[in-house]
Image (cartoon, rainbow, N blue to C red; front, side):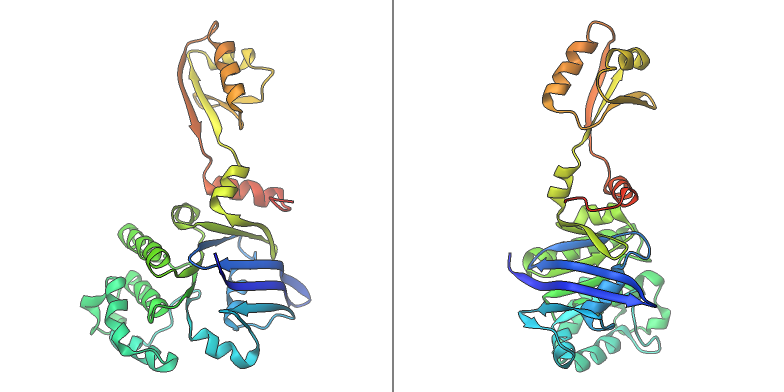
Length: 303
């Protein structure tokens, strides 16, 4: 994958305290990058730095193959779409009129307005005042404002806030289509980690301004092997038999952490003479559970 955005040695401080300290960060073309981290980890600050809304003390940034400097930031921003924190719109104007103003500001042909509204499901509300929109409709409008003109980079901060389950599913499919069909790169921040896991190809995990993981979701999963869940006729007896292995009883199951295939075979042979084995299942821990584990532990996930 080619790199749409590259950041090196980025530092941002507030009141003498570092809120961002990133050695290196890339956004590959066509990737959906989930940006996750605890409150105050620096997610919004990083997005604002990319957009030039704040100025880091130190750091170099390449965007669309050009080094970002104050003189060209505005021009480069015309090539991307963004939704930061909450949509900005004129509520006394219609959805169509809001997008028309944005097209004028960014030099986008107004033929893109209706396709953007259709993409987010607002085509029938195009000529209604935004003040009449529901919270979810206003969020959809914000997403339409981000995607209009088919930008190659989308920066989305909590884009599914206020959306119901149907709206969340619609936007997930929209983002996936943009990545696959238009090769759009998406940097998306969300506290709903289950949603991030459903959509992201890559994740960047921030803690106290530092990246503690940056890579594919597949590789992150590889670094956190699944657990083995066993249901038996007598879990306490089974735990005694398996005392040499790291296991624990959770609810009505016996849990083995990250066993190898050889461990599984050894476990079955050891238990069979003493208890009935009702079920053996491999379980992946949720991204949310792994996120809590890694951020509470601190330090880099990969050295």
